[in-house]
Image (cartoon, rainbow, N blue to C red; front, side, top):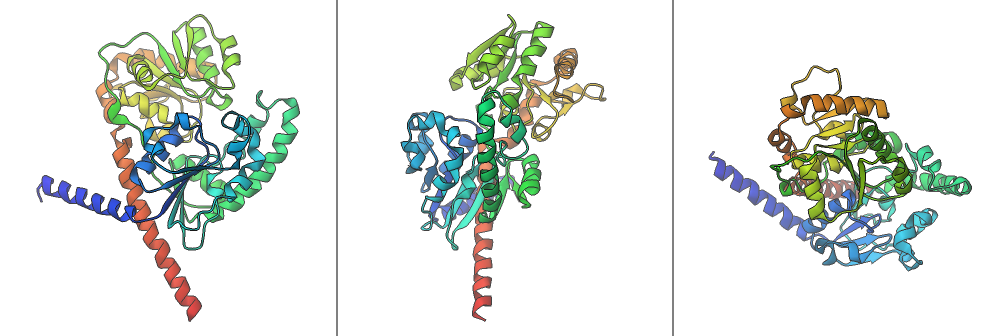
Length: 411
């Protein structure tokens, strides 16, 4: 069969599947809409796939929304009426379950919850198929509970209230896993955590990244780059201290609770840029020597974004980066031309410094074109196609199971 004919049939099947989805009454449930990060980009892609969908969320900052969401009906919970809700929402943790359970979703055929906060806890009717796209089981309740509890932002007097709230919400989070008909995980790493915490299997569909927006710059400048929210588990402190020790220029893009502490750590070669507009961020990605990624992430969109500009990544070798970065550890036999980055084995300054030195010794042999080519599999059209296929298959399975169950009851 000629390639053009095969491609035409694939496009026709995709169109037919999207048309099938367009006939469904759909609700998208997202934890909160206050800043555009990886989870919000997933929601945007789902909203583009399902233009008829209504959106439900705990709190929303409408000024931060992209056009792809502005065209949808967005319903916020009663938490939106609290003073400074879009800034203080983390303080409302004990109220999250109550707020989510007030949403009336019984009129919908399909509910897709976008879960990293507690979105999957909504109540649906027996005839509604509930698919949860899980970015991560809530870190502050499960594997990172002690790190969050002891973080400076909680404070000594806040630990007891946080512990009590987390215990209550953790029990609710576990119970509400049974409200989900099908789980989708954003990585194999997250799928394993879903199995551990919820005892549920999950199908893996990597999140959408705007790979096609990347490009390879003709000029590379002498600086390393860190991009992300400045919170404890991201470990930007390791990147800062490593660059202090080596005297390497570092640019830090982002803001967060750790900002003041990190500023005190920073030497003269470190610059803090805050959150940047997308055009400025693209330029920083394209022109850096490499992106430093010292945290353990469930997927990690930043390394994929860096690769879309042909830039290598130096990352802590655990979590989602093992699925996105074709890296090697110092001491491994390696062909740098077929690699996209370097891993370090321990979350320590010494380990990161060693990885940076190894990177600099092979830097000239890394291929920006090769690096960029390796992440095309994460582009937005691929995500939409995989999600559409999964939703249609599971909707059919869900209704087949319900039909069989009804027959058994009648018999």
